[in-house]
Image (cartoon, rainbow, N blue to C red; front, side, top):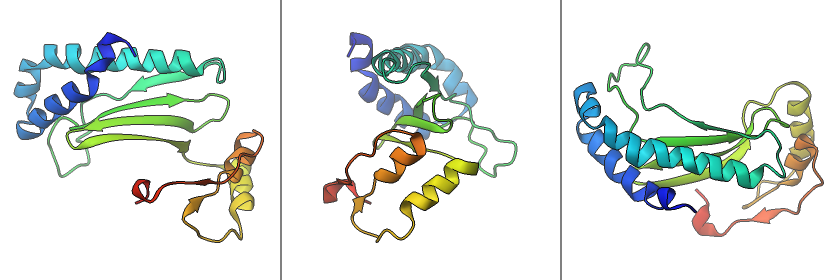
Length: 163
């Protein structure tokens, strides 16, 4: 991890907590240089580092930093900025498949999966999980069939990771 990304989580959490208290355009504009230095630039460096790491296995991987501004057009909540920082790496070989990383004042989230299955991919997913009992372990064999990779073993997550 580069020096620029080492402080990303604590700096982002501090900035986003302050933003949550004063979520106005004036506050954000007066702190925009701090946002750029402490959140945006380190997040872009992390996007690049993770993409470089994954690229040998996922050629063409793309990273995305979500913008801080909220879309207020249809929202009753008119606060102008998100109080989280979200990053996404999209795997182009499997449309809709990606890896997610998020920071908010209360924690950090990481995840991955396929979003918005359609057509034959949705049919393959349904066939792969049909009839499987609901258990506390997460079947991953269906993901392999959808993505076209060799089937991995079922992964059982520790209880503290489940919600």
